[in-house]
Length: 131
Image (cartoon, rainbow, N blue to C red):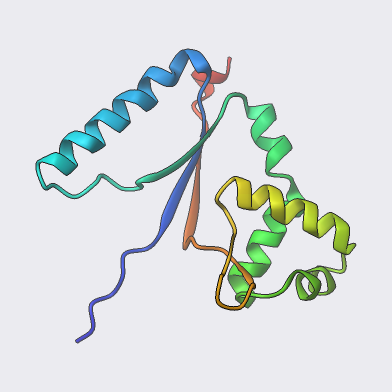
């Protein structure tokens, strides 16, 4: 029986610069686990924004829709993605470039198609930290 791959997950959250000590601590804990030969604590991929407003500015409804389409339909070219979503090519291009910078979309080298490398994107907003 073939071994099933673990779901690929990324955690997106909000952390102010004042709370970056938590991020440093997570890094140290991950490093320590790796040195001991222990598996990382899931999810190992994280992306933090300084404010909730910045998170929503970067992850607009249109960008989230591009992620959904790519995940559901599979890898596709920029032109096909623009046509599929009935959006202007230039706007889709801008959005895809931002999603690549955020590591939420990647461009495959073998065929230059865009894809979502994640099975799930988890969002965590600690309301106490956002106050």
